[in-house]
Image 1 (cartoon, rainbow, N blue to C red):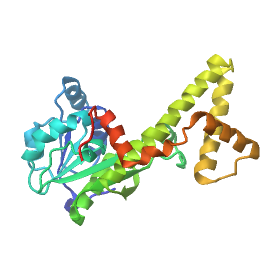
Image 2: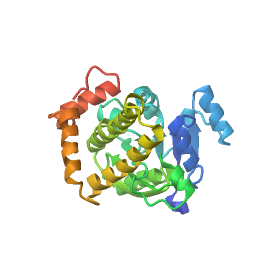
Image 3: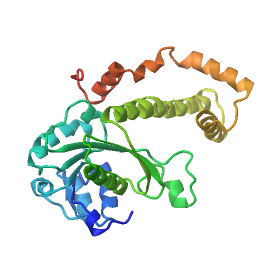
Image 4: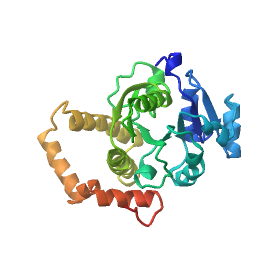
Length: 288
């Protein structure tokens, strides 16, 4: 994405030297947007300086920022927003990179400050990769294109445009930005992708370990058949590329009966979402 002078907006990155902060900052440094980088931890400050970026005090960085990107852990967002939101100019946007704290109502807000959330989709398993760099970039934000999900609590098209431009910059290269509500983003992340997809990924690894160390299958053979069949399972299950065989369907039914609880879809209920996020945020419960 190439910005013209009129497209530019000032950005402050809080937590610029952290894991996600470095990814965000690396991409923003390639744009023409004026960016201020803020980091408190000694290790994070060292990483930021080593990357050739100048550090700015938080109060200076956020004073005139059009959008403040909070690249800090969920558990720190309450304290960080309590400190910084009162210092923002009217009309500024606060962008968090995960919906949990925003959905749970843990962020300090102001009527004249806009709340937004964005999260990367990561490069699709079905992405047509053409270079070694794209194949190596499984997380996204470096070489492999990805989509992003965003939410904003404003109907102002100019503010939405600022959020989208920022999202496209920090997660670049970005194909599409999909707009949802903050609640819907929380239903996607964690419920759909962490509670389900990431859990299944971890379960596959546990099953692989069982095949190798309990059943005694040679590791190379076990990995080869699992990796290949995982691609087929995803292609058939998610896109319908080919039908599963009758024998496979029987084995799948056995797996579902043996592993999956009958009431598993309850995780998509609002009360279960609240319970899940409360555990993630180390809260007794989420206030409504």
